[in-house]
Image 1 (cartoon, rainbow, N blue to C red):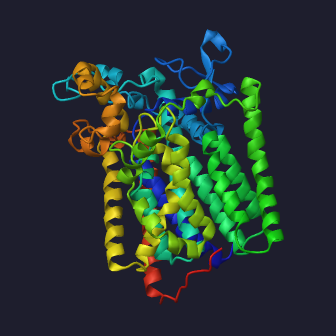
Image 2 (image 1 turned 90 degrees about the vertical axis):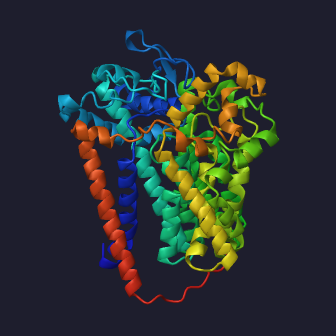
Image 3 (image 1 turned 135 degrees about the horizontal axis):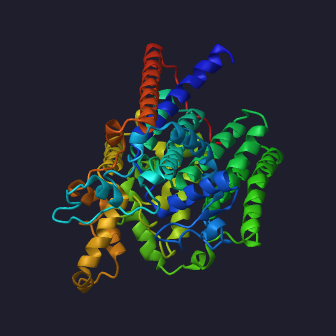
Length: 540
């Protein structure tokens, strides 16, 4: 690799290490969501048992998918209804966790129990109330965090860190795509920084959900297709774009609908018809492998290529469409315009993005309505116990290039003020997730509902979800600021029980500081070099 290539790759590498280190430093101690636990359990099963079925969750054995054949010692097992790819992506981290568990000091084996779980509080004889005047335990996990369960707890934590790398990679892709769209380096970095620091991805980088994986696959495919439309790169780039789009079906089958506008817009792009069809054929060839793997995965588990594991749940379209659509847009608990108002700037600058790339602009314009249309009638349109509009995450990255226009000073004064306001509110929403973990918050909401159910139903409320969905007083984005629990990070505990977890945080801190230093040097060099005139590339 020559010096010019090394310099070109240095900034994306610094960007990756900065965000990956930051997200690890801000990680919590556990995988809280049952969906995340199921995906990590499948990772465990792939490595330890060479099996496609996982051990059923303690306390909720029916969750996660259809029943599988009974395992050794008569243990209950199930097939995961979630995509295979996130569990596969967690394999390297799980293997590392096994090495770390072997060298961890005995004094560290209670790290994950104190004081974050019921058994940890009991072990520590912690008398402090969970809430003001309420001494009941506030976290009940779906796997053991006792001293004897240290190996599993450490494995859960390590696999969860995979999301840090995925989201850091997503920020790098946003930066690289910004350069391909004709933005200056600083503007492209502003887009990446917004994605990593001022959207719900800031929260989901510290949890284990499938949506960031799908967002990465979509943005990576767009980057390769934009390069192909500009005549850059060999045909293997098109095969790679198709493989990334096809991999979405291995991440979350429902999100494969996002591939449709990409294919249509690419076919409708400018250029010779024959060339476009050849490119589309190469991309289709790349998509074939992941799709066939997904079908084989279904067949091996259920004997049918079309069964994903959701069963009847996949057909529960019981929510009125208008209710779900309004909820996903503007509800206090799940509205994308509440939790990521920066998308408004993206929509207001779509004409400028259209001039840069019709493909990216078309995907940016269509993805959010497409996902809202997909989920608005589903029975759990709000996404369960989570932060903000989880189901809409893959649509957000393409709507962030308005930040690039803002950074380059291409907007009017009023438009700049509007953009700065939406950016500020988005950052405030994202960073408020450090105050409280959504699992703790939802646990309290459900407890509050049980304690006051009769009075709340008299007000016209039907279920606990109604408090989170529609009531500003109980919406996470508002209620977090007065919530009494402040236990979202694991490193303060690791400082008191030093061992392998603290060592991982030390490495993350070095990565974050090294990445920040590298970014600073690159930006300093950028300031020292006179800026060359840039022009918006023609529509593609």
